Image 1 (spheres, rainbow, N blue to C red):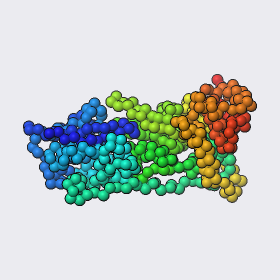
Image 2: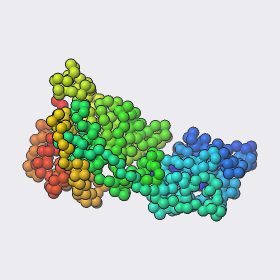
Image 3: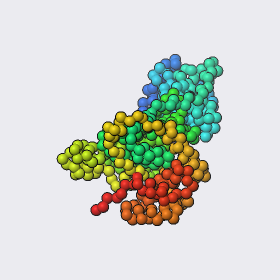
Image 4: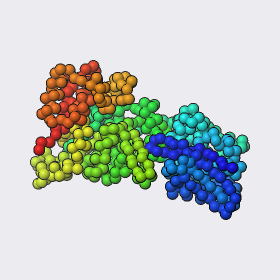
Length: 502
C-alpha cells in the first residue's frame, strides 16, 4: 500500500504541488527518502522517527521508502517533516489515507512531536485553496494561513493533537486571521528644518514611487528625511498587502500571522553582500530588494556599497523583479521597489566647503563616486543636492507643515493614478511606459519644446527622457492638472542629473 500526502515546494513566491508517497515493504529495515531532497529534508528521517516514538508508536522493522514527486524538482526546507510523518502513519494504518488526501500539509517536527513553524505557510494556504483542499500547518501559523480565505485550516500544536483530531477524540479549533500589524512610529517632517527643495523632491518621489538620490554633507538631514518617507506613503491596498505578506511568509518574517499593511522600509548596511541585497544563497531566499517590494529600499552611504552589489540593482529597478539563476533552479521574486539613496559628495563629506574640504578636493569626489555607474544613476529619477543646515535654521521653530499634511497630498495624487491605471497593470507613474506613457504624459506644445531643448543640452538617454516624463506627470498630479505643461517639465528637469562630458 502506498499512502500519499500533498505538500508544497516554493519557487520564489510560487507554491508547486509535491506528493509525499510512502510505501512499507518487507526487507532489511531502513528508512529512505528519495526525490531530490536537500540536507534538511534528508535529516527529516530522524526527526520523524523521534516524533513518532514520542507519541508511543514505533516504526515497523521493514523497508520504509518515501518518494517526493516530482522527483526532478529540488526539495528544500524543514516543512516536509509533517507530511512525511503523516504519510508514514497513513501507510502504517494509524490514520485513514483517504482523509489525508484532502489536505495540503506543511510543518517542521520537533523530537518531542511538537509541530514547529516553517516559512511559506501563507503560500501553502493559497495553493491549497486553488486545489480545493484544506491545509494542515503549525498552530502558531494558523492565523497566517487563515488570511488565504475560504480554506479549511487545521493548526496542529503537536503530532498527538493532530491524531486525536482525526480520530474525533479532541477536535482542534479553526484558527482566525491574525491582526493587521501595528502602526510603526516614524520620523515626522516637522523634525526637518530648512531643506525645502529636498522635502519637495521627497514629496514628488512618494507621490509617483520615483527613485530619489540625496547628496550633501554629513549632518544635513539626508537620513532623517529618508526616515520620514514611510510617514507620507499611503498604506498598502488589501491586494498589495497580501502580495507583500507572501514575500514575508517565504522569508519567515511574518510574525504572529499579522498581515502587513504598512509599506516596507528596508535599510541594509553598506556591507551587505549581493545575495543579501538581491536574493540567492545556498537555499534561495528573497533579498532586501524583494523584502522592500511595494515599499522603500533606503541605501545610506551609497558609494560605500560594493560596486558589483550596486549594479545588481539595475535589473530590478527597471523590470520590478529579480531573477536568481542556479544550476538546479531558476527563481523569480517581485521587486517593484522605490529606491531612496543618500551619499556624501566625497569621503570627507565637505567638498563644497573650502574651510572643511580635504586637501585632495576635488579629486577625492571623483574617486569616491567611482563606484556609482552611469547606468545605475540613470535609473534614479530625482537627484537633489542637500545643503548644510545653518545655525539660523536650527534655532527656528519647527515648520508648520508635517508628514500628515504631505501624506494627504501624496494620497490624493496616488488616488488619481489608481483611477487612471485601473484598466492597466501599472499602479503608479513610475511604472508606465510605451503607448500608455505617451497617452498620459505627453506635454503641451511649450512643454515639448522645452523638453526637446533640454534633451539635447543635457545629453539625455532614452531612459532619462522617459523618466522625466514620468516625474512631470507626477508633478502635474500633485498640482491637480489634467495635462502636463511647461512648468511641470521644467521642475522635472531641475531634478535630473546631467550626463558628464568627456
